[in-house]
Length: 193
Image (cartoon, rainbow, N blue to C red; front, side, top):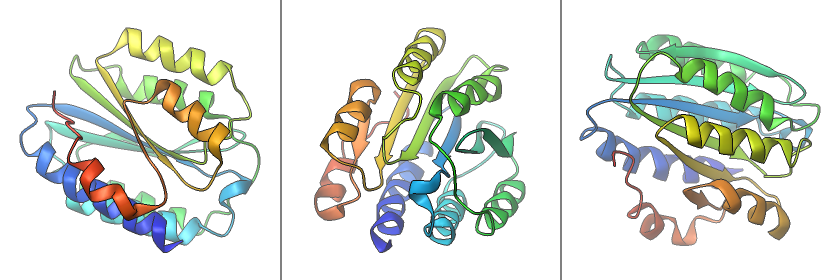
């Protein structure tokens, strides 16, 4: 479980430096809260809070936090309030991860969060990649990519080679839960272009 925190810490550190140069962007952090993440709730909540604290959230760089299993829950709608985002992620720690992994529902909600500004959209998907709604989820992702200037970063927690292949099929960048090569890989991230 420490790997998840280390992984998101590396992402947030590099994301912060990249976001400083962004003119405008909307970020949607989409977190798998299905049964496969049961037992990881507090760690995921903590990692999300640390991610939020590090970003320069402002009217130009807004963020939403979504959780998904059988349904999608908007923990924090798109906002420029770091306090609201942090509070929402604090509550996440007490919610039990359960159910299936219907990522398409979260992606459709992300579409609603993204809709009001014509700017760069960044989707950070934290999941094992074992989607209950495959291939529908891939269809929704492709539709979002056509609709927006969208970059998708996937963080794989657990999973296997098949799940990794699924994530790689639509992501601009995939990070594994093994952080051994992460620092070098994150140097390739360019959230602003």
